[in-house]
Amino acid sequence: MNENIQKVISALTESESGKKQMEVWDWYQGVGLYGLYLYYSQTKDEKVYNYLTTWFDKQIEKNAIRWNVNSLSPLLTLTYLYEISGKEEYLKLCERGVKYVTEELIRTEEGGFQHVTIDSNNDVQLWGDTLYMGALFMARMAIIKDNDSYMQESIRQFLVHIKYLSDTESGLFYHGYNFIGKHHFAKAHWGRCNAWIIASIVDMLNISGDRLPECIRMYLIGTLETHAAALKKYQDDKGMWHTLVDDVEGSYAEASATSGIAYGMLKAAKLGILPEEYKECALKALPAINGLINEEGFCDEVSAGTCLYYDLDEYRKIRLGHEPYGQSLALLFFLEAENL
Image (cartoon, rainbow, N blue to C red; front, side):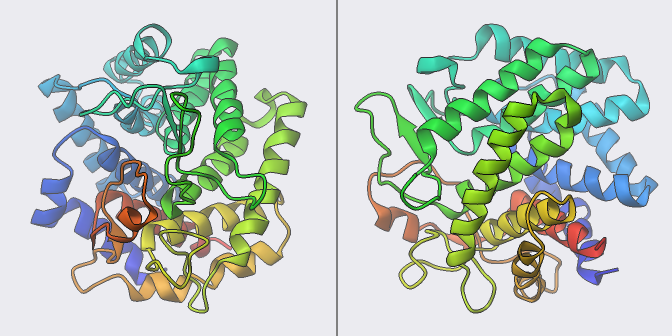
């Protein structure tokens, strides 16, 4: 097994820095938890399972969730822990998340999830991040509750976000869209946004299985094929993707975008959704990401949390460091590469 898998997990769950980063309930932590769950699902490592259940038990006891799109992210992992543990409090919290989505979450035109965050309503804005943070959770709840309306809601989010965020000229995705003024802000093909989208589409296809109408499955696969082909063109010589995907010379290589894109490509190729050439493309990134795991086990060169900007230079200035979602996306990639 790639020794960096254990290093990444230990840094996230045992180091003082990792513990501090994981203290609150938000999307940073939610993506990290999902990576840990997928590791547990493959290895049945009880230590990781106990970490996950203890984390959620403490958060439930604190009862301090501030509901927004990003706070849905940890619930994706909780749906799986509910199935394993049967704990009713886990199901109740997931149902509270569904109530927020269906009754309280502000919508854009055409019913999109407005990307409400912990510190901003982001009025009538669609962000590419939303699919991973909220739409996958709704698909999972459709399965757990055998409720097709939840699946239809998840599908609607994919359709609306793809409609408004896709750049049909390049095949890439814009970071966000504003219904006020009908624009894409800086028209940024932001790296991690493109990672969220390719990973979301692959995971949606995998999670939903035969619950997806065939026409929707074909639509998502077609979108994935176009997106993957566009991304493949911009992979640099070291196997990395950059924080502005189509600005390889002018923006820095970024680890979370690279890991998420490679994860999506590799998983899709393994599932037979994308051709074999994308497995090779994804694996070209593996030495680079392995080389970014530092002695403490943190994945370096991960861009900080990023809002929408009107100037591409603002994306180029985002600080680099290590973050829970960087750990998780690297872990997702490593786990897919481990099981070829």
